[in-house]
Length: 215
Image 1 (cartoon, rainbow, N blue to C red):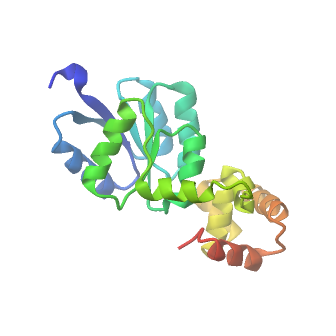
Image 2 (cartoon, helix red, strand yellow):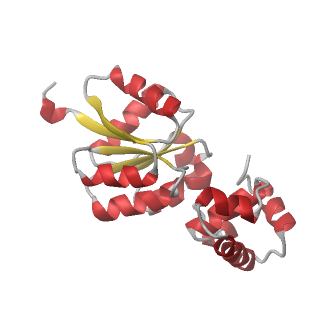
């Protein structure tokens, strides 16, 4: 294996245990090396700018900025890097949003190590990666009379606010976690309620549970 053929991977995850676990998995491969790691979104963007990595493994839940925001910024500044999103969320929640935002693939963190390696190789070669489960979900959605679900009309921030409220968090909790003002989160809440034709948090939570948007 020549240096020219080695896939250089940048890992962006705020959990040290996850980063070390990913490094261990990739250490057993001859054609993939970990070129660096980031603990937050801004660091991931900065390291991506260096242009030395072929693939960015990006956690969708970062402490300072949402993974979708980081993804969009990275693809804007460093379009050649392939971004493989990692998440604990089910694929039908965030995968399509990630792919539309420029991701080359989306993988659940509970996936087998072999699937991770295969996904990295696939996106590094310029192809898209989706799991068999997501492929089936997409196939199920393709229909002449298919109507787009209301939650898919939301912006990324509005959708994030929806899932966090449905998980039991208050506007203040969300503002603190996302490092935004309470006024801004309240605006997102008002917008999503209007778009989804809902009146209050109870209806919002019921909708999220009914549509399997929260665990």
